[in-house]
Length: 169
Image (tube, rainbow, N blue to C red):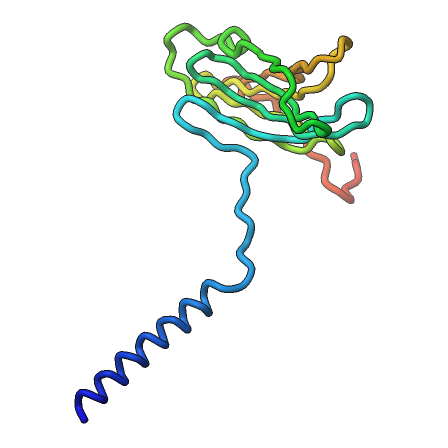
């Protein structure tokens, strides 16, 4: 009798465990996607790019710490292949001294329909750059710098206009 009760208790425990596992692991799981990733001395980010007039595709940004390079390419939607790579020398762009210990961060943001911007920050020097990619006049991909500023040092304050606020004097 005691053995039968122990077996039933064991079976009931296994059934409760299986039911709990099914209950808590079934259903839709939230998508956990990121627009960027890093591994050792490399960072990769993606964002929308408008090429050839109004054609939209996906762009890929790669930051190579070792080479001090920012590289960019687009995906050809018809063939599914990568285009050529454009690059910018971040060492000279950011004015970084050789053998300096750098700490880059980067992410993309949407600045217009079908066009992402890349925000690159080097935290040791305080430099912050804004880049986009697109076709050049010759049809190859190029990286365009829109701004390069320093988030440390002298700061300039700009008043923020609030929605619905009026300028009264």
